[in-house]
Image 1 (cartoon, rainbow, N blue to C red):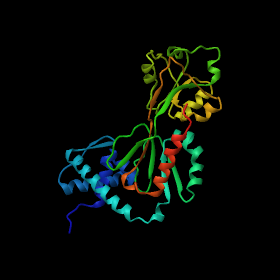
Image 2: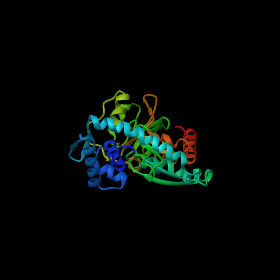
Image 3: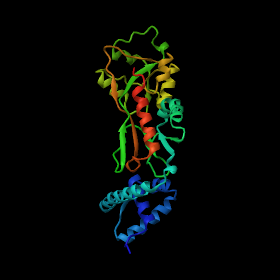
Length: 299
């Protein structure tokens, strides 16, 4: 007979250590924070040592806790691999996709029917939030994250190609205005997109000009920042991937020219569990997504 503590307590500890709090662990495991705390306390009694330093609204693993987290993560990966290999193939025809909101609204949703036409037996279950998914088993299979996520054991991360992040505005905003140099943008209202990993300060620094020191309207979604630019509020600094239809329809124009330097870098990343690499729905969606991005018109 193996001498082991409660498996549910080990799961509670691993989730709390990975997510940094009992409330977050409770959300992932569908338990109350109090239940997570009681299980962790029981585990600490079993080990006869503390596993966390407790702070207000968060916890931090002790040195022993960090060592246990590393070993448990490896062990859970092995358990997940073994269980995944035995799951019937018919259970894998549903794919739970989590996606950053602006990518979901501006890029993925307009194209999702093409995936469904190519793969009619795969049901897509979409969810969206600004934060990268924890990829909890049974909840999310694949995640499209905005901004490079931290490395995590057992999780594959793939950049979704380089994106052009450029100043864009409504054509009417430029009527009668001469914009030949980066410094010429200083006369316009600059629109902030708070979650964008590329900041206005990056653009001004790259273009060798001083960023104007005045108030800037701010939005927590790239799609909202672009909508404000369409309405003539000012100049948005966003990925042209989000603005494909607005640019094609002439509702937005890129402010560009020989004197301007472009920011080109990956800002979206595909994430999935290493144990699911052999999943047919996952690989079908991944392959379709990469092909669609590769053939997208580049400005």
